[in-house]
Image 1 (tube, rainbow, N blue to C red):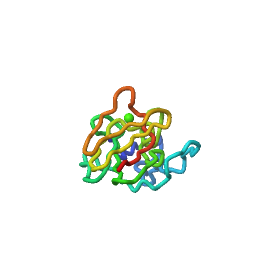
Image 2 (image 1 turned 135 degrees about the vertical axis):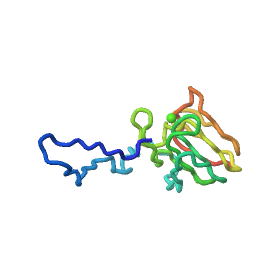
Image 3 (image 1 turned 90 degrees about the vertical axis):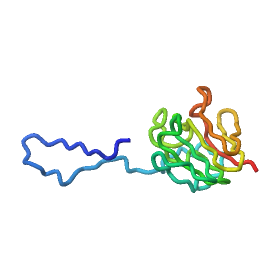
Image 4 (image 1 turned 30 degrees about the vertical axis):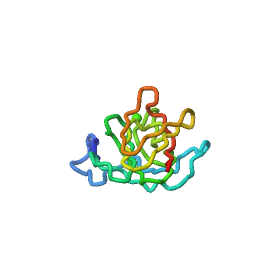
Length: 150
Ligand SMILES: [Ca+2]
């Protein structure tokens, strides 16, 4: 939760306060880095929104969170949109992952649909309507795609 706290290191010997040109070499490169090698889910745009901190999971949305207890960076996906989590940005994941694939630890299904949580390398599980889920140790950070069952 560190917002851009610029750490200005004054160059020794340099004059005072010439810090007007703060070189912000932040990580501004967005997306465009997906391996795309093993994609099976429909590559629909997620049409989701990044959740603000401690935002409620809106009605008719599936909300997914990087961390347990529905915390950390979160994202919401409208009901009915199958989503490859490789397309969903989510910084700070395990192993340096920058997407929601193999990264989600808790879920809120605030829709009337059954949601299929798909691990490309493993099993599929179903999250019933209006249920939340904290991943177990075995299934934590394993889901790669989300499908919807009618
Ligand atoms: Ca996680």
